[in-house]
Every structure is written in structure tokens, then in C-alpha cells.
Amino acid sequence: MCQQDGALRTQEQLRAIRAAGADVAATLKPPLYRTVDEQGTRRLYTARYRPAEGHVTYYWPGESWQQPFGDFAPGSRTAALSRAD
Image (cartoon, rainbow, N blue to C red; front, side, top):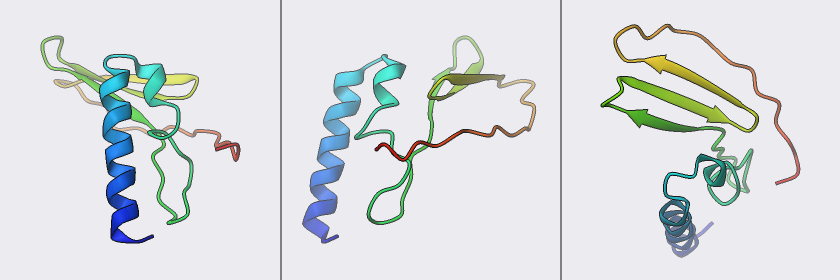
């Protein structure tokens, strides 16, 4: 991918983030969510930070995981990836 293609992809993703706003479901769709692209990069989850409430929630398609800032518990999740995108 050339530098110009990367810049265009970045602009496309920025527009998608702005359009999604607080809609987490919209961030779990292309162009923001992708299992793999031609460069081998992935974006497999999104996170919503809630400082006032003191927690973060990680989102995957069909699953979420909330963690409090003050008592963050290390862990792992297994996500099934689709080849559809």
C-alpha cells in the first residue's frame, strides 16, 4: 500500500468514527472493525472508557467485557473471527 492509500484509509476511518459517535455497534463494522487487511493488520475490538463511572468496556461482535479502573482484573478472551470482511 502506498502512502496515499494509507492516508485515504485513515480519512475513511476518521469519518466512520465521527459518524458512529457513541454507537458501539457501528464501530464493530468495516471500515473500523476488520479481522485482516491486505497489510496483515487487524482491528478486533473497540473500547469505551467511562472515567466518571470508573470503568472501561471492551467490545467484540457479540461480546463485551467491563473492567473497573480501581480493580482491573487481568484476563483474556477468545473471539471467533469471521472471514466475511
